[in-house]
Image 1 (cartoon, rainbow, N blue to C red):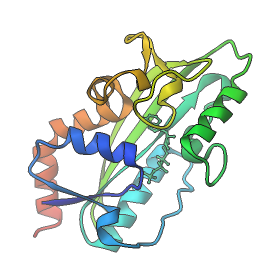
Image 2 (image 1 turned 120 degrees about the horizontal axis):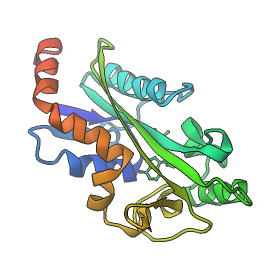
Image 3 (image 1 turned 180 degrees about the horizontal axis):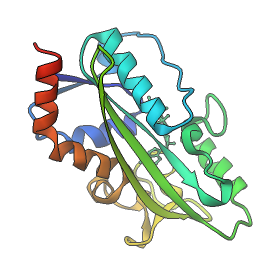
Length: 203
Ligand code: ITT
């Protein structure tokens, strides 16, 4: 059983691999296939983009593919950066650039509430797909805290931990995070997912 992780994001890949390590599947990623065309992430929702990435990779590579589309939704910014989270500060923005921009935009804002959201899509070459979702709520800090994780983790304060996501281990974060919750559902349903793959994409 091979599933291709349709992502080039190293932080996501690390977390997803860890959470699915006990299952009888071989998780490949896009780097195992050399150069393939980039899919345009121009959807309006996490759902749209997750489906696009998974369906595209499955069609191009001929394997079942799993994608993650995720991002940070900030109340005081009307839901931004949302689906633009990876490129908030520009096309070639680094995590640090995006965090700086977020802090600038949040200057003086009283309402610091925010949520991480994640949609996982599992697609096959015909375009059929399964979808899983997760969300977690927190607050945007005034300055970065911690060195772990990736993306906006140093600015995302999780009240139940009393710490940012960058101050806890990957396992602690995954227990409560948007991605962790979506993948816990994937894990619970894994037998069904394998049956679905066998029926729809017999080897
Ligand atoms: P792929 O499309 O190749 O998977 P990407 O980084 O472009 O990688 P997205 O479009 O889904 O992925 O953007 C997700 C962005 O949201 C990511 O780059 C981070 O900035 C942020 N993000 C998502 N999950 C996060 C997490 O667990 N911790 C911190 N930031 C996260």
